[in-house]
Length: 161
Image (cartoon, rainbow, N blue to C red):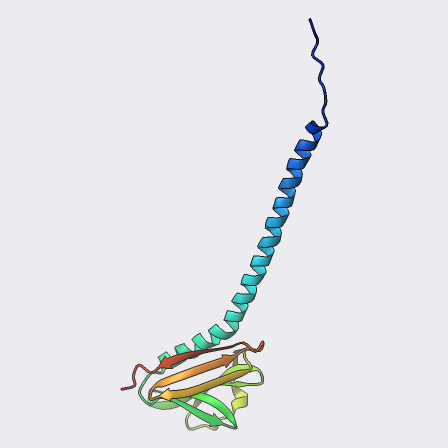
C-alpha cells in the first residue's frame, strides 16, 4: 500500500492571497469612488440650497400677497426692494425683501411707521438680489449667493388682469 504524502505547493498559498488582494483592492476602489460621488452631490446640494431656497421663499411670499396692485419694485435708501403690500383688519402694512450686509432680509412694517432697512430680519446669506418687472405682472427675481452663483426665476402675478 502506498501512502499518499501531502505535498504543499506554492500556488496553494499564492492563490488565496491573490484573491484576498483583489477583493481588498476592489473594496478600496469602490470606497474611493463613493467618497468622490458623495462629495460632489453634497457640494451640488449646498449650491442649490444657497440659491433655490431664497428664490422659493420669495416666490411663496409673492403668492401669499398676490392681489392686484400689491406687488411693487422700489428703491429705499439706495437699496432695491421687493415691496409686498397687505391689508388685514383695516391695518395696511408692507413687507420689504432686499439684500443688505450679505443677507437676504425681510422687513414687515405698518404703512404708518418709518421704514429703516437696518431693522430687517436675516433670512439667508446672499450677496445680491434683483427684481425686474418684465411686463405687467411678470417679474424676474435674481439671487446671487455668497459664492457668486447666480440663479433666477420668472414669476407672474396670478391676480394681474
